[in-house]
Each structure stands twice: as structure tokens, then as C-alpha cells.
Amino acid sequence: MTEEKILTKHPLGKSGRNISKHKYETMKQAIVEALRNKELTHTELFDQLNKSLKGKFSANVSWYAETVKLDLEARKKWSELLQDLKDIA
Image 1: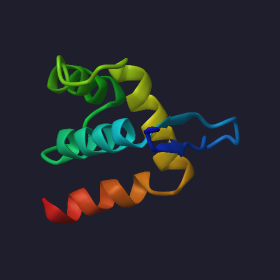
Image 2: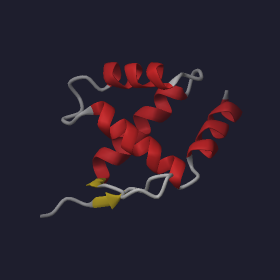
Image 3: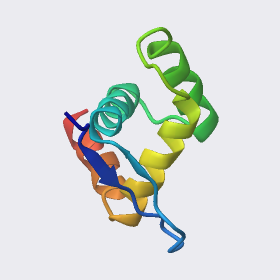
């Protein structure tokens, strides 16, 4: 059985990456959880993701976080995500 993949996009039109859909969704959810309580700088977000996913994510957390974040930006979903989290708070 082959693992389902997602082809990511890049906001500057660079080549996307073909990554595991499960890892993509896991990272996206971790990003949402990290930003749920407050706005974080890029460094704070990545520090939080590395802490929360330590031992739970079998790949390079920072690489996947950046790839997912850039994909969300390219798909115009990053701003929507941040706005939705502000509306919830």
C-alpha cells in the first residue's frame, strides 16, 4: 500500500515538494495548536513545534513546518488561518 502524498506549493513559485499527506496534516494541526493561544514569531513558533512534536514526529520538524507554512501561504490559507484563530480568541 502506498502512502498518500500532497504536492506542496511555494509562495514565490518555486518547486513544491511531494510529501506525506499524514505528515502535512499532523504539522498543520500542530501549527494551529501552537498559534491558538497567542501570536508567535517565526522563531517562537518553530521552538514550540519542536517541543510539542519531540518524540511524536519521525521527521525533521523544522523542515516540515517551513514546508507546510510556505504551502499555506502559497494557497492564501495562512492569513485565513491567523484570522480564524484571532476570531476564536
